[in-house]
Amino acid sequence: MAAKHRSAMMEETRPKLIVAGRKAFGEQGFAATSMDELTAGAKRESLA
Image (cartoon, rainbow, N blue to C red; front, side, top):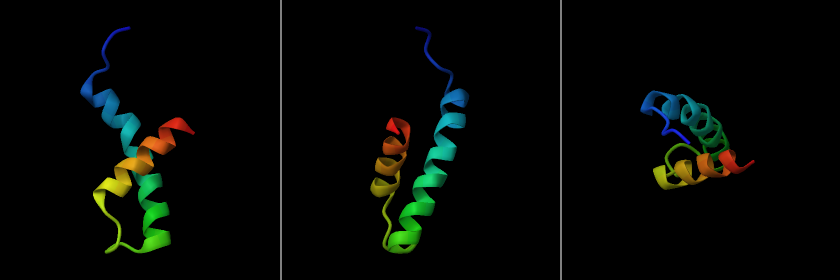
């Protein structure tokens, strides 16, 4: 399998981060949400 280009990976990751951010900000608020939570949420979106 060929390695993905960085731009392709960014295209796939961006919408996952947006979904994770909306969920986290809605549940906890902006100030209480960490980058670790956002990246973990994006990973969960990948598995869904």
